[in-house]
Length: 272
Image (cartoon, rainbow, N blue to C red; front, side, top):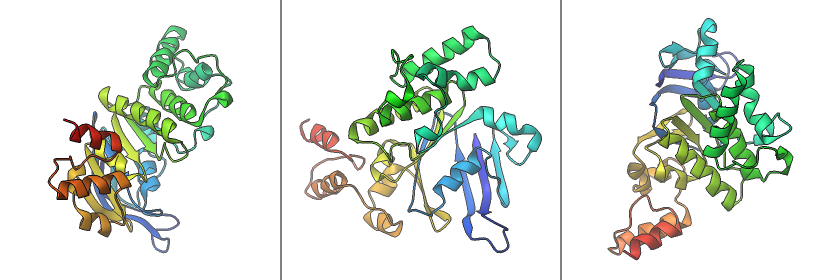
């Protein structure tokens, strides 16, 4: 489990630097998906970097399966348990082919060739890139590149995968493919922290964390946030058009789930 207890962080000295996060208490369990929402500057990316030890808190503690991220002698223990996938996949792709890029991490672990091959094949299959092993990464679509970045993380066999706005640069098809890969991570027992600007992404999460002005504005179920317009407004969030339509249908007596955030799920409900 990744556990944050009373975590505060500021860039620069704690005494005079702007406080980015303050008093954060949060935990991510294996097999759980938590969506992180909030306006620009609310501390979402900083939270991710605290969770994988790239940053250490000014106050409080961050534990990864019991290991304190401040412990310099246990850095590898943290990094081997937590993988980070960033917004721009081009910043993470280093290989000249899909399989070479996916194998980069396991090769640096000094694993036997057979084990590397097994991990690469499993990771690429998990994100729908099987058959593209020899393709050059620059020939992939943006969505495929992002899935390759996720595959590279999976090949390291982490317990937790942190995704920092992985669909921000994608078209609808690419976004759908990446979100399907994210759902697959949870299904295989990974703890998933999904930072996103898309309120609709919260609908399929187990829990939602909303950050505002460096603090926790909401931590709970998707239904508790998406079904409360006043709370959404206080958090500086708004429903997507399909979510607004679903809300209006519920007001008219239709049994549309609170988590229905796209046209397909609304139509499916109405046609039952």
